[in-house]
Image (tube, rainbow, N blue to C red; front, top):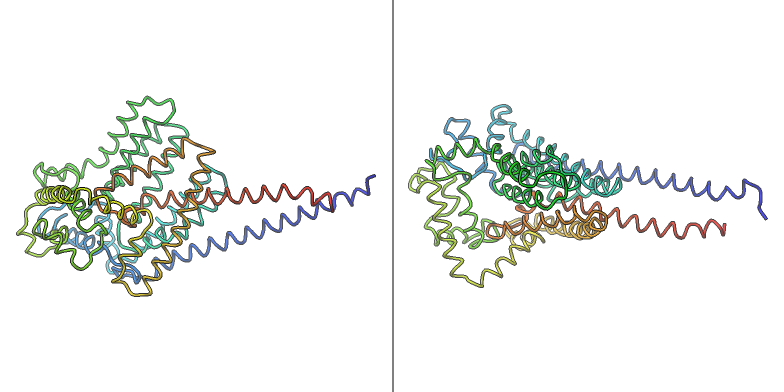
Length: 454
């Protein structure tokens, strides 16, 4: 026997109002979290002011980039002590030189605000990628993960190449997912341009070209594979061609793209933690008789006593091969350590003894946050595989190739961050959305019984 209509509808109306209140609360909470994340990034950009180093950072290669920029402004060319260099990719020194020219004493502050905008663009690209693959909720969670990821936030304040390189990697990931979903020529040409520009920002980003070639042959679609592969090769070469022509000219055909690979390989086996620690210089000097790349990246007259960079790079490769043969199976523990630095950020726990206690605590806390994001991202990848296996498989191929191609060289958090961390933010957003969907599914399973009993 049915009661009055108002009585039968009252429970549903109450539940609907409760849902609306909950949705509004979630909306306010999300807006507050986004505001807090943006404020955090404002502080990262503002607190260092116009200083070369941030209060929390180690400085890294900042002095080297600034020296190159000043040499360019002063008419000394892209060189150290008058000797041409191809140790550093040209985009960032040229950017610094232009900002020094335009903004003068406020140049570094201006660069940091540019990198603030680049960082926000990375975050929105992470959200776009997650939303494109898994829906609106995944996009919102990815936005939050991107805003608060320690590396993605921290590196925007450093005068280093990580910020622009991360932006190129985020664009690359969005385009590669789009190409797998629907191969198109404009997407492929976009990928080629990103690979070229990324390689001119950080030389190791040239490895993204290998990823594109693999995707071209693995993706299912209507584009001819061999023509697509040719485009994937030619477009990046066109982008980097001015730099290659410059190197062929100044090094008389003995160097084409970079003179840094041998030095990176030597550091990767002799000082694998990739940090300037006491005794590291002596270890490198014992292998080649000088300290790479410190003894090159200087305007000191002593630089003239060393050979041209291509010769020095070959010396480093020869020394690296000698060390490899000498160590034999001892290379395996070194590579395992490098993998832990790269994927687990253990370099931020084990090799920060020179930092103040406050900074070590902050870095340790950042590592713990990173581990949480990494765990959620792994879960998110399995959820993505269930919904879109081809894209999930390409992402797995991507991280595998990026990791494998770094193994002969330096590996630590800074080397991982531009390539991997935007993808982790997107996948973590997918994982969080999948978890929330499971909770809501359980609630819906319980809710009808509650309505009947009411």
